[in-house]
Length: 164
Image (cartoon, rainbow, N blue to C red):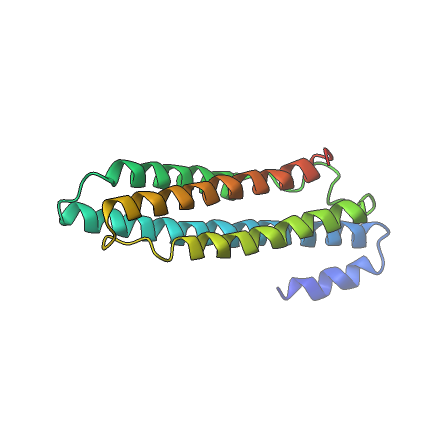
C-alpha cells in the first residue's frame, strides 16, 4: 500500500504509533497465514468432491458415505481456520509482544504448512479407480490426517490466548 510509506513517516513523529503499526502488520500476517491454509484445505476438499462425483457417476455408491464424512471433516476444519479469531487482546500489541510466544506461534504456523503438504500427499492415491477396500483405507488415513491437522491448529489458539 502506498499509505504505508506515509504511515511509517508518521510513526517517526508520534510516540506509540510505531507499535500500533507493527501490531497491525502482525495481524495482517496472521490473517494471511490462515487464508493460505484454508485455501489449501478447500483445494483438497475439491479433490475429494471430484472423487465423489466420479464414484456416483460410475454407480459405486458404497464408499460415498465415508467420503461424505471426510468432506464434512474438511469443511469443519476449513471453517475453524478461516473464521478463527486473530489478534487476541494484547497478543499482537507492539508494546506487549512476548517474543517467545510469537516464536511458538510461528513454529506452529510452519508446522501447519508442512502438515497441509502431508495431508495433500496422503490424498495422492485417493481416486475412483481404487478397489473399495483400498478406497476406504485411503479415506481413513486422510481422515486421521485431517483430525491431526485440527488438533495442531488448536495449538495456535492456545498460544494466542496465553495458555501455552
